[in-house]
Image (tube, rainbow, N blue to C red; front, top):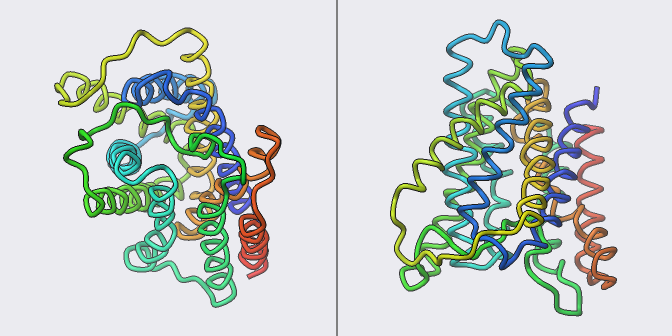
Length: 309
């Protein structure tokens, strides 16, 4: 009965864990290189899992097309725009704008899929979004620590050079990222409802994105900083984070979309800024401030309302 909700929260936990690992890589590898390697690694891993589970059998052309479009919207466009928005706004404000994915997904699900959310669940969604906002705004411990500790990619090389980035452009890119993420979930919803294996869905989504990211590597980017070849440990941490966050986390989202509504799944899977709070405490020995914990309580209350509603 609560399977889609449990899967969505599990996805948020995976994404939060991946973010903690990403925080260890700040300054060690440029974002575009890391993104390409991570996407390729997740494609290989999910394709192997799909093959082992027989997930390729009976796959229809329309399902492949929808999943490819979902990957373009939700991974290639959303990730690229998100990285650029972080460069313009900083990780905290960019993540705050990106949290608009939840309301965008609710509206899209209502308009395009006729998904309705009752007043109790809608109140729960509002509480979760409020909790996420508080966790993002006040989640930093009193003692200074790297921004990368939050679930955002390590940003050193980005899509646009700093002198061309302004606050309006950064906000616009953040909105594009949120819309792309919501659109990716929306397009994938009918496919997952038809019974496609989640690992198969992710293999197609990340596979298309990996090809596009590799093609992007051929485009000369002005302002990109050349860095030394990353160490094996850096690559290992990055790939491990990708397998947990993108591989397992996004596969759980795909599984949740099989029976859950787009808006609810997007909201619950966005809980990573809240779930990362105890991880930050354990990692840095610095307790996040009271408003951040208040946000966690609100998010928990909202999750309960969603489940009960």
